[in-house]
Length: 477
Image 1 (cartoon, rainbow, N blue to C red):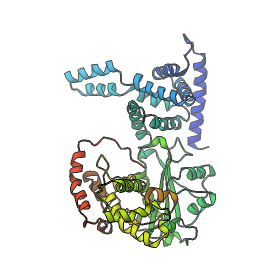
Image 2: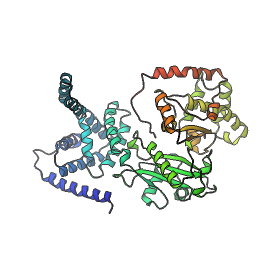
Image 3: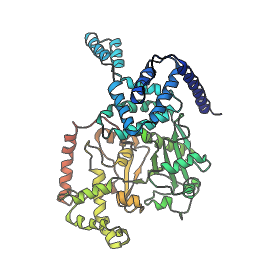
Image 4: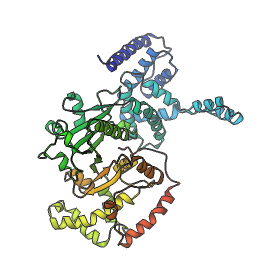
């Protein structure tokens, strides 16, 4: 029996004993049903002092939550917002005390009074057996609900705050995934794959079994059979420019010791309820260390990454009557994109490439979101990790998803170990995108529209400087 299983069984035993104690405890009245009953249970949990009874209460609350309809779950989240915020009287008193005497004791009391009661409630709910997995599912639903209910943003902030501690890198376990991994975990790899769909078990075997393939995943001790995030790695001699070089059924495998390049070709977040909790940067760095230890001849670490937002951005530029990126000639050439057969016509494909690649360079190097960051979420992730935009690959992925999202475009981000920290600082401090000369050359300057776009860029950043929001959502992975 593993330590995790033993601990889980022990918690379950304590919880069952707590249920019996709680069931026979005298109560002045029966608890009401629905949200009112859950509110009373939550208050009881916050006032509980016994561990067994606390576990039993937490388990009861989470079980009732799982049986609620979507509307009732929204009401429960609003309950957390309205009734389980900071104790206003205590907070007012702490503020007055701090104003009168700025001592360390006053600061501590102010800090404790300002903490919403729902944070302690969530901590105590985590006492239940499988509490953390239920709370992750609860936040997944919360992320959906807050789209139409802005008040729930503060509730989500408390979940995210606690999850950032509970899923800290120090608690995560890196495990290799291979063809000998238990089937119930391999089934989840198939289901969670978010970049290049795995159609069946044979396809999964081609990604895990050969000597030139690796896969690694982060697990949490309380979710030992459910990966948080995983990365698929191809060991190659050179940097690939097409996904078929990596996943093609007819490719010729090589021996791992003959590889010089490690290609991260798919990174998939598995738990929607952990969106915004960063794992990917730790995962890549840890995998690089492990690969270098096992295969000292590896000297290049690179991705072959999708560009999920490029097609929609380009469509907007094409619809715009005054695009600062596309010339009249570009617009005419890109009209071929409306015909799904354009890649099969060499002449039209060449014309599309001539217009599309400079536009892609603008998208990466100068395009910005409203908060002043690069438009593409995958770019934000890798550039924020210290990678360099190394190469853009035209028609690198002909799958329906890639054609729909990026007209087949893929890019290589290079993790040059000696430059990672410098690149990260350039991006984090100055919002500077480090790119290879070949990418920069694609950013043409011979058209007035593009000169105008670059001239406006500094002003756009200045205008956004006061609007930047303190959030770290894009993981996102």
